[in-house]
Image 1 (cartoon, rainbow, N blue to C red):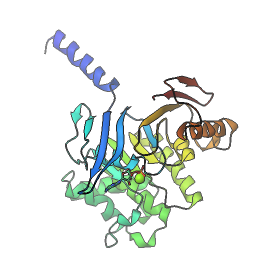
Image 2 (image 1 turned 45 degrees about the horizontal axis):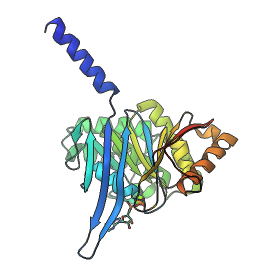
Image 3 (image 1 turned 135 degrees about the horizontal axis):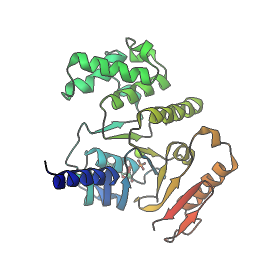
Length: 287
Ligand code: ADP
Ligand code: MG
């Protein structure tokens, strides 16, 4: 390869490294039944960068799960495009793994380890022995190495959540999709799982698209938060959080940010194409 071409390759690689991983561009999503059409989201746009912890936040029914399903490739946009690394999404794939709220989706007849191995094997990602090694590696990361041979019904809700996360991460997806993954847990376990997810992110640096209707959870988990208006979901604002972690949870800045987001979400504060600078976060108003 000559010097000119080499230079070209390097600059292309840099372009890939800095361009967002996921582009959601002007996406409208609808459910069509014989009787009627339900518009779930209207002209939603956002971009997720590599290693972002990107949160979709909005009230129930604003289309968060529908957006996540579209990114996962289960439903197709009526309008707009969704691209992952500049490839249009054409259906589900092992580069996008979803963790749902219902952990009882873990087949009860498989051990914890077999549950984590299963997607690796059926997708043809890894042969048995390597799948086993990879499963143990991620079970170790979520602190469940000692429970590899246990069955799901013997685990607490928090432990099942960790199995589901290990199973998803073991697939090493380009983006991890989580739909209210901790909503069914009691408050203390939920807080602990948020903390563990952040510690895991520190270690693995995966890219996360996380859905929640909890303002607090969004502030704890996300470095970027997209606020969606009620049904049909439109982008109301995007928030860039500079600081994260549970240490700041009780702090006055955190509380002020939570109140600010509440006002933005529920329209007590006019959203008008403005940029706000907060102590804790920058808020960019989209509409
Ligand atoms: P969220 O996850 O933010 O609570 P959803 O994405 O589940 O919201 O739903 C968005 C809208 O689409 C809601 O009005 C909901 O009633 C509607 N919806 C969701 N799933 C279906 C479906 N399978 N058929 C028809 N309408 C649906
Ligand atoms: Mg939902």
